[in-house]
Structures are given as C-alpha cells and as structure tokens.
Length: 473
Image 1 (cartoon, rainbow, N blue to C red):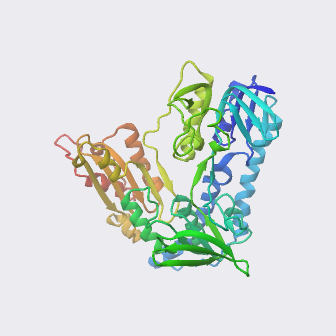
Image 2: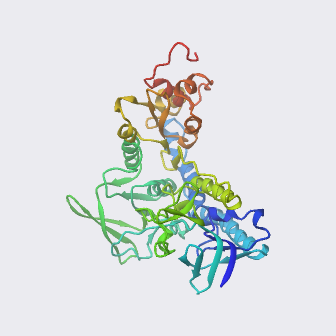
C-alpha cells in the first residue's frame, strides 16, 4: 500500500491540479489512456486541426458562387494527419515524461484503477493507493451501438478515425450529434463521399428547433443524408468494404462504405471506477454526483476530500467547463476552509461543422416551458443575408436567433449558425454573463459597419422590447 497526499484519476484537466502547492507533498496521477486526456489526443484539438483544412477545401464551392474559380485538386491525408499528431503526440509524451520522470514528488500509474472506497484505489496490477485527497477526473469514452459487426476493423469511433492510413473514398457516418456533424464536414470537405445516417428525423436535436431544422437542411445539401434509419448491423464485403444495414418505415436499407464512423455519443467512465460499488452517488446518466464545490456525494452528502470534475461529473462534455471546474477544485484542495463553487451559468458550446453553429443559454422551447408567462418570452431570427457583409458573402444559410425576456430586458439564449458562429456569439455570452440588457447592448456600443457583427446588432434591435425615451440613441 502506498499513501499519497493527493491522488488524481485522469490526466486531462486533472493534470492541471498539480501546482507548486504540492511540491513538498506526494502526488499520484493515474491514467491508463493517452496522457493528456480526451481534448488533447482525440477531441477538441486534433478535430479542429482537421476542420480547418477541410473548411479551406470546402470554400471552393462558396468561391464559385462569387465568381472566383478555385479548385481543390486533392488532399494529402497522411501529411495532414502526421502534421497534427506529430505535434500532439509529442506534447502528450513530454507531459508524461515531465510528470513521471522530472518531478520527484509525483508518481504516474499508466493502468486502470477502481475505487475500493472514496480514498482507496486499486490498480489493475493490484497496487493499493490511498490518499488524503482524491480527485476523479476520469473523463468519458465513445460508446458503440449494440449491433453485430461493430468490432470490424473498418468500424471506427472519433478516437481512432483520425489516424486512418488514407482518406477513404466513402464514409458512412452513423449519428446526428455534434461529433457526427463535425466529422461529416471534415471528410466531405477533404474529398470523401459522406453518407450520414441518423435514427431520428433531424440533426443536432438538442439545439434550438430553428437551428436543428436549418442545419439538417444545410447538411443534406452538402452530403447524402438519410433520416429515420435505425442501424441493425454492419457486415464485411469480399473487397474489404463494409455494408451498414438499417431498418426504416419502408423496410431494410443497405449502405456500402469503406469506413464507418460510429458517432453515437460518449459515456462517463465512472462505471470503470466502480464508483457506485464504492458508495458514491451517480446521476441517472452514470455521471458522478457532485455538489456546488465539486465534492463527490455519497448518500446525498459531500465526501470530505473527494472531488470530481470534467466529463466524469458534468453533463456538458466541454473542455472549457472542465477547465473551470479544475480551477475551482485547485482552489478548494489548497483552501479547504474557504471553498468556492462552480458557476455554470450560461455555458456556451460550438459545433465546428459546415455551417458552424454556436449556442448559449435556453432554446426558445425551453424558455417558454420554464416561464411563468410564456408570452414574456420574445424571439427574433436575423439572417446573415440581411446585412451588408452577408450580401458580400451571398449568404443564404446563416442566422442569429435570440431569446429574451420582455419583463427583464435580458437575453435568455442565443443561437448562431453560419460563418464563424463561435466568434459572433461571444459578445452575447459576455452580455448574459454580466447581466447586460438587450437595449444597452444594442445601443450603447458602436457596431462596426459593415462587419458581419451587424447581424448580432440587428438581431438585438429586432427583439420586441420597449426601448423607452431614456434608451441610448
């Protein structure tokens, strides 16, 4: 048995907890996966490093509409892949080496681990680790549907598909969430034929209904889209390709492809920790239950000295949320008598697909369902194409949808689809986080003309709110 002052399960955002405060104390960090966690190795960073060249390649169609003859003559997939992972793999290896070899007070365990109790962990090789403080930052993993054929080598998740040896000619994308949307854009932009198949009738169903509807239409204009198809099996063909078998209202459907990407969601790794058997509370979806200070709960009560963060305990599966929680846990570990809570108000998210999507706050449907008076909820939809820069782009898809309260004059939600949506939404996030009202935001600052940000200004001005005589002009 080895005792530590701090034991951290997970090397993603959990890795940042090891500050100078622990220099004279013993720390264990335990992770059986690639050091650095999901975001660095198989998530946010490598996917966006694929998204950018895919966006450049896909821009040829936009340029053609504007009278510019651009040509995408091919994709050097191995070159792109090696550029990306040549950088990322080195960062991961350097991080592991620094923690494991250069810090005398830190031990790294590169194996799976389970909880015996909230302060006792047992590794796969049988080593017993105890710690005064334990942080569970074990992340999440891709989930595969329970159908025959998912074990075939041509079937991938987002964890493996980016390391393919060559760009496939035909990709079958199974799923309708953000991972499927991003990878459909990547492969379509880089030159693959993409067939996206979804079991429901719309893509990105957790977004505002207007965004979901318009993105579903836009996706169908870019790659082949098949809706209301339920996957039943994957089989291998004699030539090494595979066939996806689907059930529909009109009977069975088969889709042939070189590669299948199962983008059917991610699940928290709390089950692999045996957290429930160790007495810890779980949310209905399997996440670790925590209080506002990130302390893990057992029987509804906070467990002293046991924290959780990131995908292991929150519903967002977003790196910026995990980083915020890591800062809170860092403070609480070092200042146990002065705990701070995590503020999860107005958590934004973006989908780096084509067209790009970003959202923060409530959808129109959620706002009306939560309002005491549904008539208090006002919405507006402003198209990119209604502004001067939208004219320059000849944009026919982009939009800003805002949701606000008539009685308070505050934004309740913001939803953007189109060019650089993840940037355009940021001033709206700032307004919501600081309590800046719609009228002040629309009228107090200057909005640069003819920048694309005018679509945000015009959306704010388009909300049916009483500006009053004292409003800024």
